[in-house]
Image (tube, rainbow over all chains, first blue to last red; front, side, top):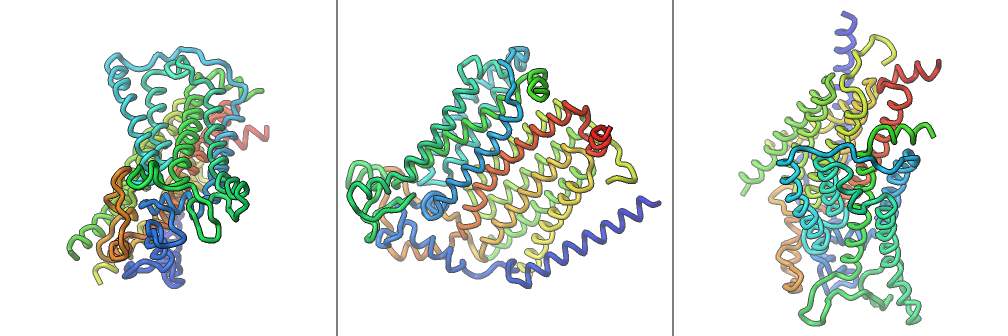
Length: 269
Length: 93
Length: 135
């Protein structure tokens, strides 16, 4: 009786909140219902500038999302990567007393293990392809790293953590790979600036392409005229982010797959 | 051409309805294993909606994160802890 | 007219999911249920941001088509104009790509916290944890 009245009151309250939010967002112009005819001016500018070689601000990549992510607001993404690593470091610090893994969990049945081993070859290849084509087709370092972490998750669940730790995927090595990715990002971020300082020119942090007032750039074609398009810093930053995200996520999932007792030991420390 | 556009919008509405139903079932379910499976279904609906919203970058990230890793993460937590949610009391909610 | 009705319906469903997940986070005592609702809330906010970037008419992804490692002609102004007419707004997608992966990392951290709380108190019920903590 009392519960039913409370439920009804909550339902009415929820309805009021939903309608209030809807009307408020629509009145302030945040929601356009139905969607507007064309793009906003800022989006239009990005879409027309990114692969327009006549513009001073182009980033030499047909992928507008990756261009904005690593070129136009590149410094922001670097700091977001920092947030990602703080979350990972926090999770690792919670279980810092963890012991070397015991090999108790032997994985699933023979059929499941065989199928998993076949799939385990395919997923990292797809992940690397997504990450390395990030400046040409949809994808990039974040996406490739997430897909790679699915492979290590599959290995942990189907084959046991011993499968990965027995092949040298130790905590320290994964932490080293993660730090290597972060260092590569930092290196690429300041490379154009260092080039500019050496030449005595103007330069920016996270600069990608040549500009009339900052005449340094990382180029965009490997091998001259009809060479391979690598879009300046975008390729290297995608590669570094792929390394960092896949190593970081694999690390937390391996630590999570370890036996219960060692985790408890970490908690009581 | 407008028919295609309408079909796309109607499909987004359909997937959002599906997501709403699954969210409600996640909310009221007391067996956490079933709640995790419902939330995975909701992530599938979101992935399909993102496909229709022309966001292939997000589909690549979300199909790995939302469908694969959220589910595995919650199942890890479930295997370490208790399966059933306690019956909700009248007070202290 | 029909289009407007469909979009009102989509936005109200999205906001209903937001309200529902907020209720689940606040009122459900189980920590794992709170985590699931937290993930749904984050994903719904991301999806709503992507919806704001859509325009009416035919849409295509914000990726200039037909470019590969070795075959990369530089497009003319007319090509770019027609591309910019159909492509959706890339800015919400950029914000959401990082938000998805960082949301996952934060959720991993919170899962570790939940498992350690269970190891210490033997329950995931927040009321029970509070009771055992005060003893």
